[in-house]
Image (cartoon, rainbow, N blue to C red; front, side, top):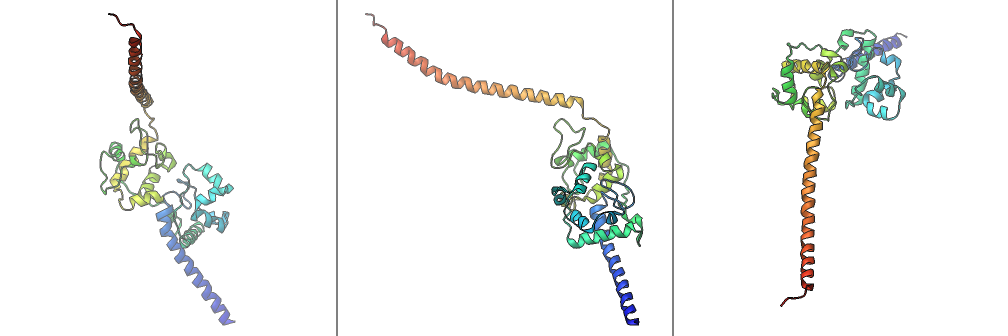
Length: 283
């Protein structure tokens, strides 16, 4: 009996220790991949607060969702469909292994239940930034000022209010409403610091932004939340479109005229020659 109790106690202690180790590993993954968009017990950020999610959703569903949100959404799952409708940014596939997924879920469960580590560890990592300059942020965004570590300008993938009639790239979303969508200054700063999406991570892991660059970009993106695209932008585009259309008409007319002239001249010359050949010769 004593041996059985000892074995059971050892198993419980070992299992508890293994659970703590797994949760600790999940903490690291959560900070790197999840904390830019989620908290555990600190309210909504870009995505929902994850506190208690391991009690309200089945473990299998959570595994499927964390492993590949895109597949769950494509399957028509009602919970996934509701999340897409509720939040403006769809959760990306993070490329986590099964072990990573298990560790993250263990960490969420630990933090939700108030286990060692405390709920504060689940909040998005604090980013202490210097004061930001929106004009300097705009220069960084459009590429007029080079980024310190050599990354590409934001405009190559994103557009935002106030950068001209042609806007920016379309690979990433328009950031005009990012201040609201990402949860304000702290959310944007956390997102730029951790770059949780696969596309951003692939670029910025090798070219991280400096704290001052992040602060300047946050200040500029914040302005995009209240700025309207200039009314003259549409007028500029219309004028450019009209000018382009006029140029195309002129080119087409010139080409067509030359084409008709090339046909008419031989016909007229041939007709004149035929007419002259039929006229009686005068002595």
